[in-house]
Length: 202
Image 1 (cartoon, rainbow, N blue to C red):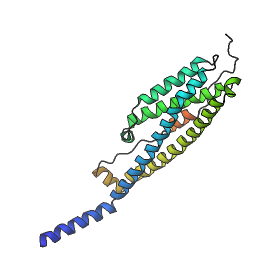
Image 2 (image 1 turned 45 degrees about the vertical axis):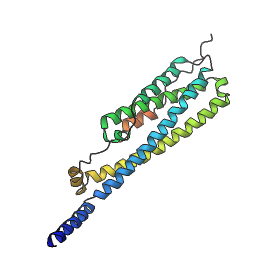
Image 3 (image 1 turned 90 degrees about the vertical axis):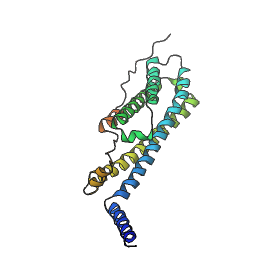
């Protein structure tokens, strides 16, 4: 009987200790990171799904410069070749590879949209304009999702680095999670370099 009471007291003490050292907070914030990351992947997938229709529409403009179109196709292929899994948030190297590929695709799409302004028939194409609106909306949703992910990771990493919860992080192997880097944000925000020379006629 005494032993049973002692075990119950030990269990209650352990629960209290875990609560006090941030264990429950780690669980909560880890779930937030997973949820926000899933939304990032969802929005990137939405963008990827739009690209084949955009490419098919642009191909209808016979004089459209192929180099720009090829860069979009290649960037999408590279971005989709990176396996986007929930585990990426715990693998800094894989995460960096993923965000670089998505950054290249963002740059290629940005250039495509700017270059399309040079083609009156394409600008007047309702199908293309509808796709463009969808793409712009998706890019906005990507930005929102990325910002939420950055915030959730910052909260988690702050807990993992702070005392005394850093002791819990070490005890349970809660590693610092990667986030989108300043360099990547700068790369995405750089406007494409576009030559506005008139396309050569065939």
